[in-house]
Amino acid sequence: MPTKILVIEDEKDIVRLLKYNLEKEGHVALSAHDGVAGLDLANKEKPDLIILDLMLPKLDGMEVCREIRKGSRVPIIMLTAKREELDRILGLELGADDYVTKPFSVRELMARVKTILRRSKPGIKEDQLFTAGQLQVDFSRYTVAVKGKPVALSSKEFEFLKILVSADGKALTRDQLLEQVWGHDPAFEIDTRTIDQHIARLRDKLGPESKRVITVKNVGYRFDPE
Ligand code: CA
Image 1: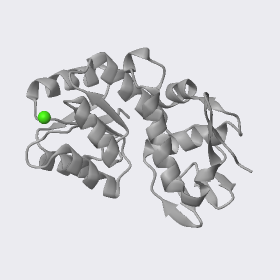
Image 2: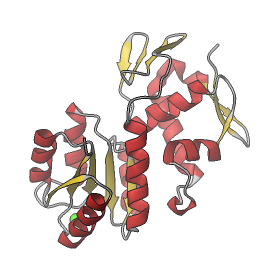
Image 3: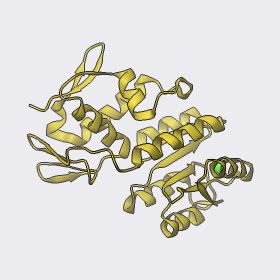
Image 4: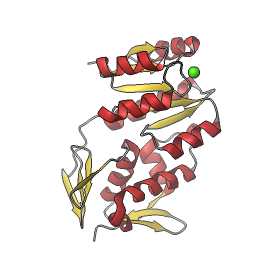
């Protein structure tokens, strides 16, 4: 089955460019030109991935993202026009999976689409259930609970947790985390600060179990299962 990708963007040239490139990769590309229509299509068509512009008529990208997240974990890549907007979105923690600042290179965006789709595909066999203290992670269902209470992680945060847990207590450098979560491409220019932000939010959400995510000075992070 081809992958269905929804592009929500009011700039028609960008929509055309993205559709052309997505279809060239063998995906089915759908598009909407405002937030309301986009949300509607997302609910109806259940796409495998959504590329979502921040500035949209009728309903802006943040609201659209928030609404989608109420009922779906579909991967979302946000498009923003400015670096400041990006910082604001990261701060708001809307649950988007990735962010691209305009003007973006199509090659870069396509590479990110590929990485995210590869990651969201089932098939990597994990230990289904992982428990450490009060923390419970179900890798097959993508659910996390602390003290029996569900914790809502973004898919990036979940990915970080999974990678750290899978490392069996070994420390991972920020570069290793970067590569495993975003895929290796120096063109992405994601700085290590972004990793620290994701880890900070992950810790925040893990509450009393955040102590297991340990900062290894001058290296990166490790997970303490003991
Ligand atoms: Ca726009």
